[in-house]
Length: 100
Image 1 (cartoon, rainbow, N blue to C red):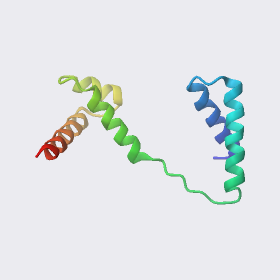
Image 2: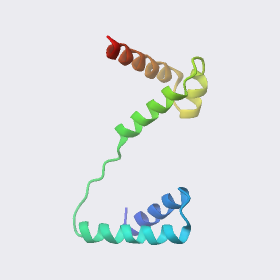
Image 3: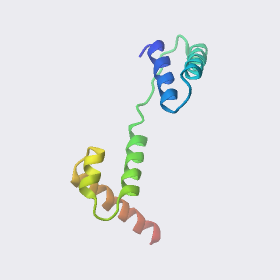
């Protein structure tokens, strides 16, 4: 991704978080300039953070579980019902290990 696309994504994320568009553009520009100053000329690897995202999704599914809404959770989170059952089973097992 080039630096202009990065700056635009930062701005859009800020606007999505209810920051005024003009302020979001200024902050995005400042962030982009700082990254250019610190990392200009370097090759960077930025993780996609899949593990953390999966953990957050798992926690959200567990929090939203009401006891009988497996199908709705699967649909909302775009996963299979079997996967919902698996996540809940793993959570229950982890809970039991902690209390044992």
